[in-house]
Length: 115
Length: 112
Image (cartoon, rainbow over all chains, first blue to last red):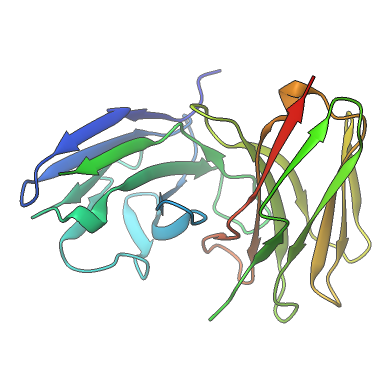
């Protein structure tokens, strides 16, 4: 079956612009996670959705970052007024129910470059 | 601050060599330890989820052990092959339903 997909695979933007990153989780998975991997670091948690609601957004670095999942499937991560420090690989993962022992299945990521 | 440490940061082995990596994590309030393999330009691939002290898991030539009391896990690769070249990430969760906390990974390069 289809895995987690993310679009675009690469995004180059200019400082100050707005970007949207999309994640299509595995069908039927209620839990969806966004992570960010900066150069030389491991993936860092941003936000976790259970269904349509953000159950934990403690990892969002500031109010320029926002994510939605209006129908409980596709999610969009939105970044306003991008800064060079936002350059990273943004990973999306989904799991069947969100339990800590559930496997999280990852997409291939979106590489964001802010010039 | 919850830290996951992985060592070594990188290593290079010859085809046929066996190798192992270490993942250290906080042992308090432990829930689960996850191992992933991430090849360049691909999605991170789940290898193992481990929950119990003393757990041992195996998938082909790759195996992992878990010690929750002292807070470490080992990943072993027997008879490394060039296709094993990847970054191996470990991640732990200390609370049901929340995000994974990742280490920086160990990057393995296998030469033929």
